[in-house]
Length: 114
Length: 120
View 1 (cartoon, rainbow over the protein chains, first blue to last red):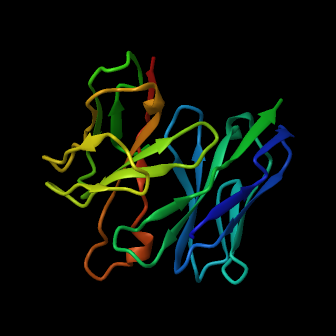
View 2: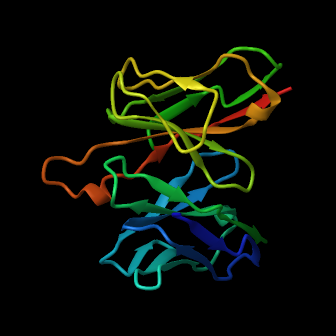
């Protein structure tokens, strides 16, 4: 069964600190992995995308890594800001369907305190 | 911000009522999707469409129905709402890759803001 597991479930950090969120997946055959940011009451917005040939991708203060051998990914947030408070969702796409089926993790709820 | 819109944003309604959740996108995308999301849980695909006159059921069984008469419009209807239908409903769209393009980088789905439905 294709699955995406994220940890931790929730995280509280102080403004200005760094943090790292984890994602493990069993989706096969693997196509790509995305990290989405979902603000409360909003739809998810894509932060990064990595295919199997990429092992790191940055978007401003967000840096995602991918180890396709161990099927693990991480999202590192540098110098956190209050606006980073949101749910961060790991999403994996399989290569086996023309639909581009997405498998969603439950997200890590990040809270940044002043 | 993606050009995909959902209305209403919030809806509180009584049991047994018929409701339609609207979703429109101005990006000309052929593929559209409906997801259901409960608090703290992952998104579940309930319906999708490859294009006009195409509708398919997703992974999660749903009593809702959808239609795709126009490319830009993908409404979801519940004939008789029940408290178990209380949830957040998210609409998304994506495009097919151009000829020769990389299929696996073109399946990015752009999400609307969602409709928070509460059935009393």
